[in-house]
Length: 50
Image (cartoon, rainbow, N blue to C red; front, side, top):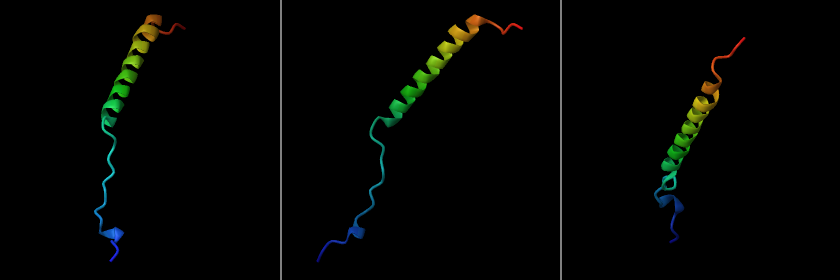
């Protein structure tokens, strides 16, 4: 008797270990970069002059 492939339990898709950490680190670096650009570039220029 051959094994029926439908008898096997479905394997749940799992993300590789550390995926969430990589995404969080990337998000934090992006946010810090944006904040640094805002503070040191745009705030240094001051208010727009007409």
